[in-house]
Amino acid sequence: MPRQFQTVMLADAKRMLSAAEAKAASLGIPYNIAIVDAGGHLVAFVRQDGALIGSIDLAIDKAMTARFFDKTTSELATLAQSGEPLFGIQESNAGKIVIFGGGVPIVLDGHVIGAVGTSAGTVQQDIEVAEAAIAALKS
Image (cartoon, rainbow, N blue to C red; front, side, top):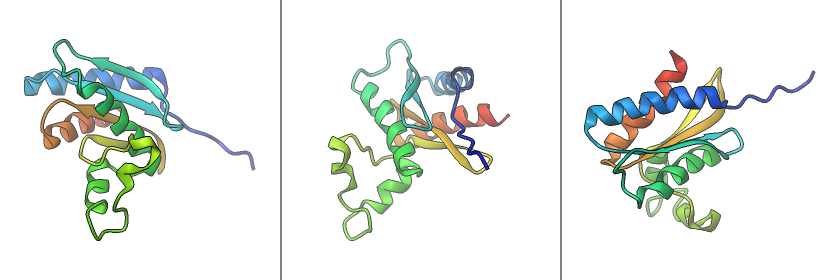
């Protein structure tokens, strides 16, 4: 039986960016928003006017981290604490692993097809913006 490989497509990513931007606007915070495909490669990125420059790489790396490990970055934060099974994971992958909230895998029909990473607000706000992006794909 041939394998099917699913990944987030540019049209999907654009719809997701739009929803994430709307959520960011409702929070009154300019955001950096990244979407990666099933291979962890950047598909789309937006830096809203005034978004923090230091958050650019964080948004991209959160998306990549969520895809690399198929877990939210907030879940990895818990697993990476001292004494937990993934302690030190943030030092892997040339230090590009981000272990605080805002990175969320995109799951469709039980398969991870990419991930979203957001950065600019609090951890909870970053999670909300990322979840708004994913909700747009599923609606």
